[in-house]
Image (cartoon, rainbow over all chains, first blue to last red; front, side, top):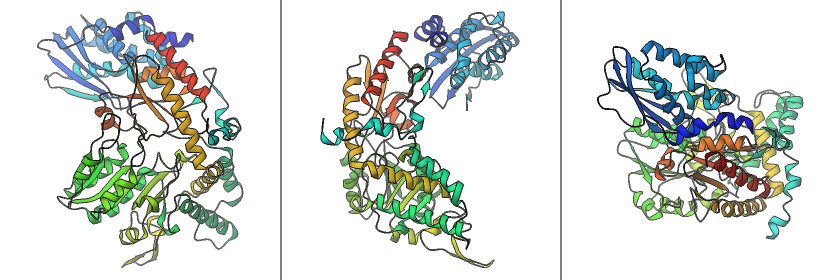
Length: 150
Length: 411
């Protein structure tokens, strides 16, 4: 059952049970809501951007262990990153999950999601928070955007 | 163990289903997703293969031998289905793609002709999306309203509340015979009687019932009954709409095209008689032949024996799962088909599904196309094991062991 252990690594289980940066932030400069209609997972991402740098990022929502851990680890990896760097992380993360590339060093802890590539149907679980983040980054007017994985 | 179960030789029956004999992730396949689709016995696979190898032709038009054979097979399938659901007349059996298309057909023909502004359609809180959305589309178009009969915590429709929704404005009742998400067997005969007292016709969604229990549309008294071939051990893309001839005769056609007309000029078209009025275009001929073979197979086993065996499996599964700590069964109706929907504290059903899959166990996870049911029970999704007559107690034991693995990982 080694590949199941690859999917449900200790750090993923830990973040799914004790998500970091969970809950609203005061005075977000932008936010977005993501929804995966296939499984009903929902996530809201709130950002505070200063001069295109992510000063703070939180999420809220409910879903499977993969989606919650992904959102939690995403928030940890984003703080202090520029919008361009965040976009780069998304691309690297997406390539890792779809098997187009192996983990790049800048992904850091996000590399624990490499096991998801063996489960194509779960890729959307892991990327929901990231799609939502991108919508929030595009949201310069402060209006709530909504994205769907379908 | 009762007599019906004793004579039900499940190990012999399993040999009729080639797909069951494989491994998934290195483990023997345990297929517990029968409410989504059921597997096909060799007899069905052979019947479809035989059609293409020897009889393939279009129906109702060629004068040649192959067309005669195809047409005969197609019409014999209709008669077989008529007898299977105890309809009065084969003209009352309309071939459609499946349950969803059957419901849409009624909504778009009977519904559009009979529902107007301020009218109401009554459904229940345990419906599949396919028995909600067609009525929403119709209601929006016509300025009508959807009324929803509530359910209790066991997942049973509250009959008093249902009755109180029936009024002079009600144009149609549309209810599942068996809930796909909960397994509840609704008291449809009583519900039809209550509607008919007020002159309201009733459609029953029989997608989950036809494969698991004897259906007698005349005894139930319903006006429409729809079901799918693929949940009845037949192929996908074929289903049945039963309607009382008196209603079907009055309904406008659904789709226009070949076979549904008796004459066409550019000025005027005369529609064909029943059932062809509702069967425009070349139908799914292979599907009807496969479905007929599936019905032959089910009849050989006997629906009473199937129902008794599945009831025994359900009882076994319910007892086993009830003993699992932190597991809650969703849907505990007193009259229930072999569906075990459940949630485990602290573990999302998608994670349950992935871990079970790793042990070769196929279950459905998610909202089961019944989001309002999930909302009613306050869960985003469930894990659902749905049983068929080829499942065994050992497979339920495997499911319980698989859940143990889930708890080990998420401990």
